Structure formats: structure tokens, C-alpha cells
Length: 251
Ligand code: PEP
Image (cartoon, helix red, strand yellow):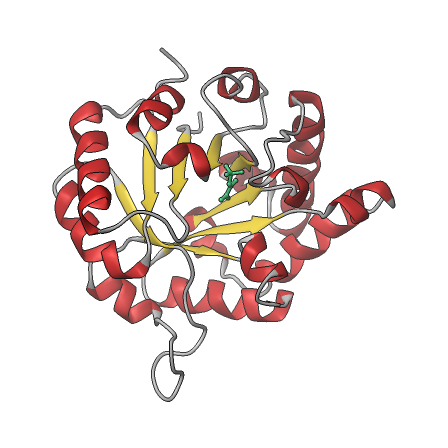
């Protein structure tokens, strides 16, 4: 049984105070609940604040990105060691905005996956097709390629520290959501690809989150799909009023 995982990607939003208040509100709401795993991905500069706000609770905190290098002359970058040093437990890697706005390649994404795992961070690896790829019939090939490249060389013992987020690029921040049938088909396909790359047991255990305009009014139908194990939430994760009903989808 895979524990549902709801992750909030705050992107480049909020300020110190609103980040702290949002994190504290989520912590208070959740208490010691373990029916759902919640992860928060604040901007780097507020990680410290958010780690302190949820300290001692089951809420995970992660970086929205990380550098593939450990240290050195990489102006503007944040290493996985720095993330771990401020108490982050997870790194989000390969988000579509990193791939498509900042041109990150599959190879770079794979190096980031390795850098995060080597520092003891868990990883959410994001994959997903653009609308052009979907319309060209390349949805499966695109997701298979990003997944295969993304986990290349990951040791069998580290597979349990991976989570996959399937995020169709055309559904991120657009208000367009993949239908449960569309998302479910890709999730099942991705799990099958993962099984082929690893083992059936690893594929049975890995969580595959859906991301793309998840809101309180569509989360239940998405979470009812057997291969959807959680959600990576952008816009609706920025306020308690919208994030809490998503976290509470099962109640
Ligand atoms: C995201 O940031 O990964 C995302 C899915 O954003 P939104 O929920 O706003 O579409």
C-alpha cells in the first residue's frame, strides 16, 4: 500500500512571513497524521524558515531544484549539501519549468538525481510531455525517455528514495487538467516502464504523483485512479484554503 503524497511547489512566490505562516498552518492542521505524506517546496531563501516551522512534524521540506555539482564556482547555484545542511530532506528535480524555461537536459537532470541521492536527499523526479508532443503522438515516448534518462545509474538500493511526478506541461499553471483517464493511462504506462528498468517490486512500491492544475474540486477524482499516488501542486498550494482540502482529499 503506497502512502499518498501531496507536495506543494511554491515556485517563486510568497515572502518570509507568508511562507512561515503557511507552513505552520499546514503543520497544525496535520498534527501527527500519517494517512498522507505532505512535502513543501519553498523558494531556497525560505527553506530555513519553513524547516523550523515544521520541525518535529512529519511534514517534509525540499528544494525546488539543486545543482549537480558539489561546490565551487557556480554562481547562483545551490548544492545538495547546502539543502541537507539547512534541513531539507528532498530535492525536486527536472520540473518542466527547469527543463523548458532554463533548458535543462535529461543528462543534467540525471546528474542532479545522483547529486541529491549522494547527499541523502530523497528525490521527486518530474517528467511530462508538451502539448506538441502529445498532439504528435509522442506522449509515451517522451515520458519513457525522461524517466529512463532520469534514473540511469541509480543503485537498486536507492530506488525506494525516488518519487516520480508525471506533469503534462500543457496542464501546469494553465487551469487545464488531464482527465483521470488521460492521467491514469500515462501513470500506468510509466509504472510499466519503471518496472522494465528496475523490478516489479520496485515499480509496485514507487509513488507516481500527478501534477497539473490540481485543485480542491478535481483532486478526489484524480486520487481515485489506482496508479495515481499523490499530487504535485503549484498554484493551489499557496493558500491554506486551497491546499488543506487537497491534503484532506481522502476525508
Ligand atoms: C507545478 O508547479 O508543478 C504545478 C503542477 O503547478 P500548478 O498546480 O499550478 O499547475
